[in-house]
Amino acid sequence: AAIVQHTFDVGNLTVSKLCQERVITAVNGALPGPTILVTEGDTLVVHVLNNSPYNVTIHWHGIFQLLSSWADGPSYITQCPIRPGHSYTYKFTITKQEGTLRWHAHFSLLRATVYGALIILPKSGRYPFPTPHKEFPLILGEWWNRNVIDIENQAQAIGVPPINSDAYTINGRPGDLYPCSKKHTYKLKVVHGNTYMLRIINAALNNQLFFKIANHKFTVVAVDASYTTPYATDVVVLAPGHTVDVLLTTDQVPGAYYMAARPYNSAQNAPPPDNTTTTGILIYDKLPYTSPIMPLLPALNDTPTAAKFYFSLTSLVGSPNWMPVPTKLDEQMLVTIGLSLSPCPNAACQFLPNVPTLQISANMNNASFVFPKSLSLLQAHFFNVKGIYTTDFPDQPPLKFNYTDPANSQNNALVFAPKSTRVKQVKYNATVEIVLQDTTIIGAESHPMHLHGFNFHVVGQGFGNFDPAKDRKKFNLFNPVIRNTIAVPVGGWAAIRFQANNPGVWILHCHLDAHLPLGLATAFVVENGLTPSSTLPPPPPDLPQC
Ligand code: C2O
Image (tube, rainbow, N blue to C red; front, side, top):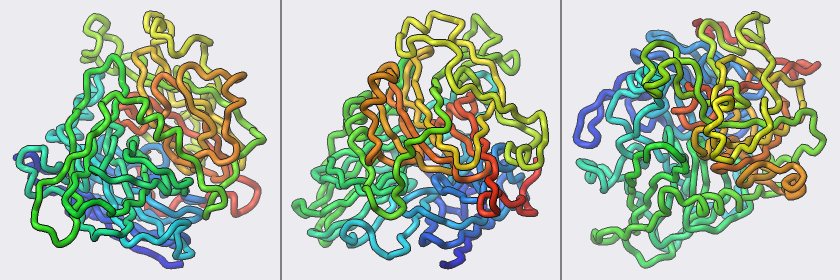
């Protein structure tokens, strides 16, 4: 195993997009930032120098961080932000996982431009499928003309979620369908008759995305750095936080084909999102230029296509790092997730002009999460500092009701969610089941819920209210897909299981960036076990202070 070192210089970068010059925050002067390539077992050391005018942290999305919770990165959860002019070195060993992940900023909306691929190659040097001819990362992103920190601050001040993006991107490039973008469209050159692996990453802030390549089929072989039973499809859907590895065989008439992505957005009672299309071009070698063929993408609200993709995936039993499903459960939680209303932080709330004391918020089991400001949860936990959080996160919703009946919107008692910093504390190695239930209280929506520190098994998912008697019988306890982010079906539910075999503090949150500051989060505090190998070491000396 090697020690892989990187230096991330976070700073201002001037780029020209959509006919405008913009100054963005980026790593090492590039968008996307550097691709990190490691082999399972390696230790990754990343020196982050913050030369930007903003606070920043870096999160290694999907990395287990076994005994290295201090390096996980979410601001105010495992560390205070790195202030401008300061630095922090993230150091961790990559164990028990291989595949495609990514890194991104975990402060305000900075992950819009502070992101890159993180690829873990197999220790064995082999995949559980034929070795592809070549591999390419394809990072789907969301582009904003405005400064994203301003967007976030304004949203916070007036109690309204951030406005729509201005474009989607493939590897940082909007593509042919946007103004002033054609020259820089991402092009992927291939040779006829080969098989390639595309490592597709959804780095967008607020939208799930459909992805297709005209006339070509994919075989999905992994999601979220976890191998799947090979699954053939001509369309892929990824929520923010998801990765999908596909094999692509270049078996079509040599020519040029568009690859394209645009949103799958299930939000009800919400203004439509940016519904533009980003494109790249797949070009067969040695061809005179022909105009590319465009794929037909599913419609914005095509939930059947999204559900078919998500529900069809299963894990590849016996593949490297595959884990059996925990069946003896120590903790069982039913957690509602959805938008709500909470007290406005100041007098300027504009969401409900007739009720200026309320702002739009989001909650889990009616608790709207507030990030601490003076200390991270992990520091509070490790040094036993009281008053930063409480351990009374509810295991069940406060009220029994019909979660997916729109009539609930009328019930003000259900709409209001108090703000608090309530976490769930569990014993080392506890097995946890969480049934995540979407609510329609202020409009249903598919929330991509991401758990730090663990992969989980998705043992079941469906539409409507979770019905324990009926739905538990249908759980897949044999080969459910293993992920780190679950797009809970719109107006529906998903059941996940994981084993809390990693001491530390791990946030569970909606990966729509608009919903994180609104409170769609909680955290698991996993206690130490009894041996040194199940005890979290003290923080590194350069851990940023608030
Ligand atoms: Cu990819 Cu907490 O995030």
